[in-house]
Image (cartoon, each protein chain N blue to C red):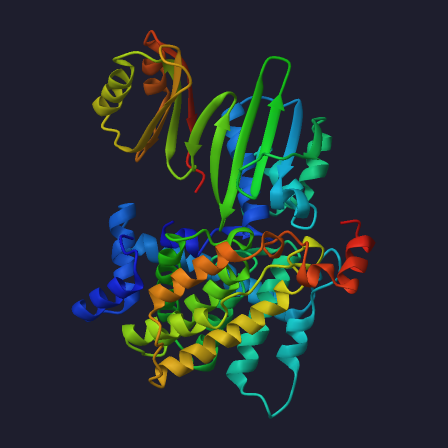
Length: 219
Length: 287
């Protein structure tokens, strides 16, 4: 955390973990799904499950999913807004085993696609996204982040980093996860600089790159 | 910021003969690649939100949705009695004003969290008012508070769910104590003592909110933690030292947090949250 994470964020109360953190998790889902939403399923785990009504966690997550930013008073009307947009939504509780006490599983869907995300609100408004669909990830949303699904074979990472190097984009943190050797892997690359469409298109061209998602910084 | 121990931060500040706030600002400039003006402006924006929340809360026109909190800051602010020192009265009123705004889903600044958001602003703003201090000095104090909190955040998440209220109001109180010392002209060693004294004496504070809301005891607790902070600051400025160094107090807090039963860490399943009155409240609001 930097000094502005500790003295910050500017937010709507009442809770950093349960309101601001939840809203940021919703915003992450909104940015990753990046499409019109028809249905929202929210599953609360742990402390979230016990206290979500009192902390406005339900309103906060929906506000984030609708793209409403921290500090925007519209969060208070988010449940009305989502109904107006004719988006169906539900809140349930779930046991996510060893997950952080403030964790949530979100499923966003429309007729063509579906996103399942598991994320935790770890305090002070900070979040960790630990799962996107079937992939394990570790995204905190503090940097411009590239999430790339690619074949698990030599040269893939080198190709990605060489494109970034040519555009003078510096990598702050990077991790590569794979499920099975030789199948698909997911790379998370957190960057100091923004990435534009051109670079994403260049990356998409490489044989072996299955999917790319760019997540702007939430902080 | 690359300091992970308060001891190192103090050593460096002493060596450079600078206030802690200067060290923190320089670290932030380096880390974020931004200039001094941008960083100070960022803090000014946060302080502006803090001031607005205090003023809104002191007017007393807000109430939470449940109606359980709201209006007490105004009572305290307007209470006319010669027994209580002006600074003390203003600090408590301003802290509770902010936490009341927070509880009513108003706009505040997490410092370090929303539940503890009244403590640092309450102390800093009030000192500014009573001693007629310049805003630029109040902003510097906020950097000191932030730097101290950042060190704690490297060891543990600042959330009631993980460490109990000692990790939120305890830490905020300690941050405010340290910041107040610098603001009132104390040396870095005194900042560290104030921080340690404040945190040490809130160890074991649990998170057992009634009906799982951020209202009882949270709202009024901000007033207690703010007065606790100024107590620590006064002691430190008077030359009282903390025998246990700040970093060891932080470690003790982390250990205590891990040992704390889960039901007393923001699950609303024990303590105040299961008193007969709390159960009535939970039933009434269907929570």
